[in-house]
Image (tube, rainbow, N blue to C red; front, side, top):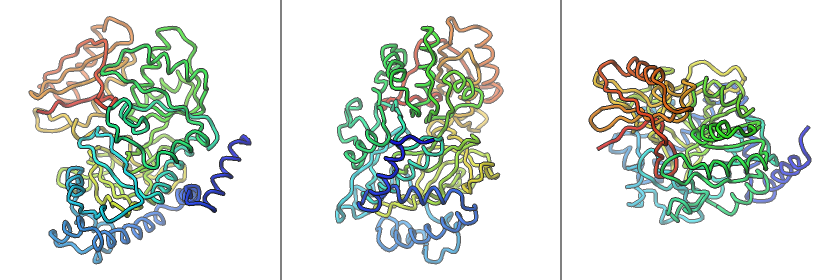
Length: 466
């Protein structure tokens, strides 16, 4: 039975959708219905939205018109999604340059606010949203979190990274960092999401017990139904609780923004008495994919996005093969992102989910393209495959596997109990050699801490570029 406050929040959102521009609930109800359509129905819907977006962009956006004309492309002649492969892929760098040249004509438009990307996958850039488009993005977010069983009015908490726009540059020093329509967002989080936002980890390296202790005390006191956090944060909380012999937290649902192996996820679920979900929601394109109760990858929201997985030559990869993620946003007409290469790696599954949703499935993110390991045999390996080796070893607390500019590979390992056992070192080296090749130079070093990214995120696998 739902609480009276949940029913009040949902009814209030319904009334807002009817009487004001705050109509996220109307879009959310439609999105909820869409996910149960057949895959064929959803693909037809996606193609209709794609066709409309492409024609709009060609005739009204100088950036795309120039780009496509130079390639001899006329989207009016497209007859199916297969024709999308003829369109050039665009990168953040190209989009940033186009903004500088006003190739999206933003100087002639008004009534929008900017969302900044985190910069984890490379250059940071800003994407404009009208309030109407922002409502659709919010609706996509609601669909994601409702999939885990949370509803409006139920307690939630978040431990973001220090560079998150929620903090308005307090920890990053970038005071332009803000969420679009911040007042609306903060009011919704406070009243309807009952969101308690905890102070982020604000150090260069892990190891600050003071910060972890504050998270533990806040979560024990507040008792949220749902926690949203970073992958390394949950590991730090577990280690702190175990080391100090504290009472474990009981959090029914947890969204972890990162990739865990099945074994690690199950260990953490048992420890925190929780069910762990994943979702794929870059700042500039909220709600691309989300997990359900089956926990086999994430459902791609193809009623709002067109997602592609491409090889080095820009051709689609086979199911379960790692490719570069390229996304088209079907809703943002102010600055359309069409065949936008995010800088992330991923894979998809050919089989539908047993939950009954019509959305096709993608796997958890395979890492960032910048962190692909280039091997001596001229092959490359996705970061998630490397991380999986150490995540599956229970005696490993935290780690970072680094490939330097000479190609040498070093695994910095923070063990659950010191010192790092020789048997664990041998296990790690043998498994890495098996995956990467016997010719690779691999060193395993015990460490007390792991170095974080400047924005507060953690890269378990990292390539140092010149």
